[in-house]
Image (cartoon, rainbow, N blue to C red; front, top):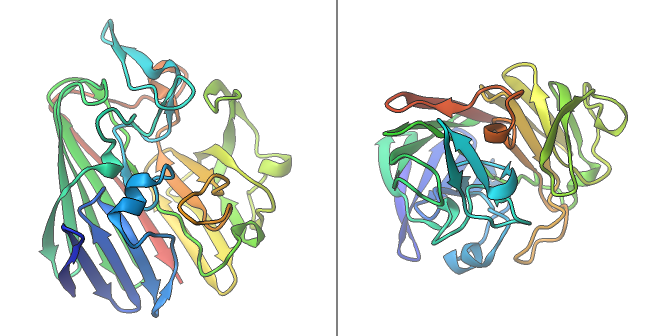
Length: 303
């Protein structure tokens, strides 16, 4: 069942199926709330002003490029593109010149009795990225999961990597006591600005999440996935499993949460291409050719 509501001038939608109730908004195509049997499982604000003032991308869709691009620039087909530098001289989550995707109005539409889509037009040169694009995210609620399907077409060759920046609490106040397993063969070595060096390090020591283990400390790290069952988080009585066809996963424990949320009140598991791929020839290719359709998915299975 889907019902339309108002979120301070923006359309929002509540999608219910079985034990799951998801509320999503045209503001940033944002997940405002995810409840299981009536219990809240993620972080969210009550007003768009709180989202506008936050720098933590809470619940939103980020793009055009999730995570970081070093030097806020890349070369494509012999041409250099200069992007919006919004973090230490680098580009984070697509930049924020004008408004980043998480602060824009998306066009929301009910697609079925358990699905809602959000569409956004991104012009050529949007925060420096080439190609005019119409992008779409489809939220579908099934009895045990929330699925997001991303799609888009560009009229120029470009780099494109949207993702969800939902923060999950799973009903806990401090997620460092939760446990996580990540289905990865390695993690990326990064510099002080969290830009990859190009080296992939083994899953060893504090980064060995090959089996379920307590989080215990802060992370903001990218893991190189081995398969579509990306990770599992166990917190109290709840278990969250993420599936995706992206090749990498950024795991962030919310050290710099804002808007009244304490550090580590929630964690983000962000499927994506490897950060800084446009400048890293050794990473898996992520170029989207003109006219080709981009398609990626992610699923949050919660029990």
